[in-house]
Image 1 (tube, one colour):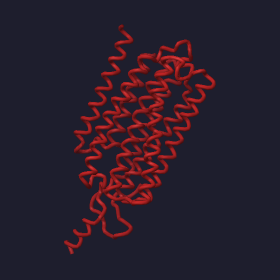
Image 2: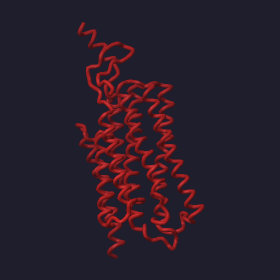
Image 3: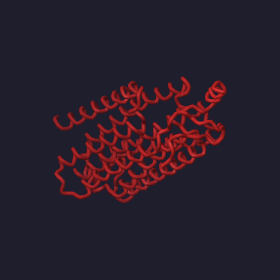
Image 4: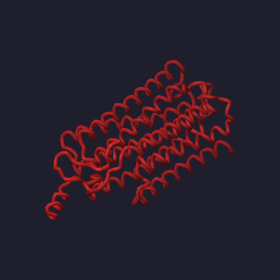
Length: 208
Length: 108
């Protein structure tokens, strides 16, 4: 009875499937090193932006340019998407692939919403505010920093979409689970970077 | 809300481990929303002393990032010393770049 139960337990899906294999644990650890490197990369872009943010070259300043409601909406969307990716990982830990897939889908849709808002924002700046990449040192630093974050969001959307397809073909296993976990870590990191962007770029831009 | 004890639909065996529920993550979410609202409100209201606003905004951002990395990225859990060292190393280097850059602009 007890041995039979023990054998059945072995076949059960592990509690944290992303850490059930050495390869999975290594992937998660290596991804932390990558995120440390990403922090440095964004740090240099923030440093450039902070140094150049008042060099407007007679173009629009941060205070004239930014509309807080749009930024607030983008912030809310990305924050909710970070929560939905938490729910995705919780569904994964409970071995519920369909729930996991649905939360990942919601995350991707919210990510797309964020990206659309950002594209709309940039288009408005270029078309109606004469604020292009080469307008001023401020504009170059702004588009490089915020655009680089947007590129990360776009990459995350593509990545998680591909993972959803892979989950549907191969199912949730100890091989696919670390991939999903690592993509969720990436998505949270994107949200963390955005916290600093809306603070340092938009809100401090309004304060002066 | 949902039960912490997971009973799988297919194999009929009860798992002995406990899964954490969504409650804690929803608390982190609400806290993040509140911190964000305080930051936006302080700027939208206007009339706030600029130096005070800058400090307030940065403090709100740092708290939110620490809470999200702790709970959503599970850095608060045991066995995460190396990831924390990686991230602190990254943030330290990033901070060095920012200080250097501001030093150039402000005092040269």
